Length: 141
Image (cartoon, rainbow, N blue to C red; front, side):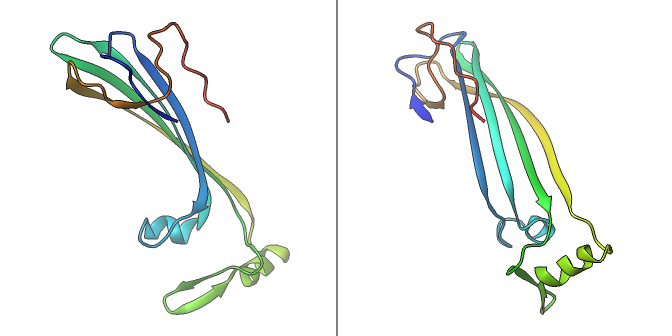
């Protein structure tokens, strides 16, 4: 949920949000992920806190990115590799006879950075304005 900050940002103002997306990569998004996984669940959990308002509003942001999937073969799906159509059912037969294995895939990465905003700017920020004593909600999963 994106909300506009009502009034100037002050030290201690906090925001948080969680967003999840389940879908497929395209060759245009990432050819590597397109061929490696096809589809998966991706999410981002982020928080921001204003830590200084001397000459600028200094906001520290932390984002945790996660990805998860089960590497398997789904009936009716296929992919074209080097001009050859490879059916998931064909690869699934390799699993059925013990020559291939399904497995879980997942990973997490955290990025932290700082944003400097003009002191009187009212940006659109994720989450809930905590200046009124309301604690930003924990991400719903």
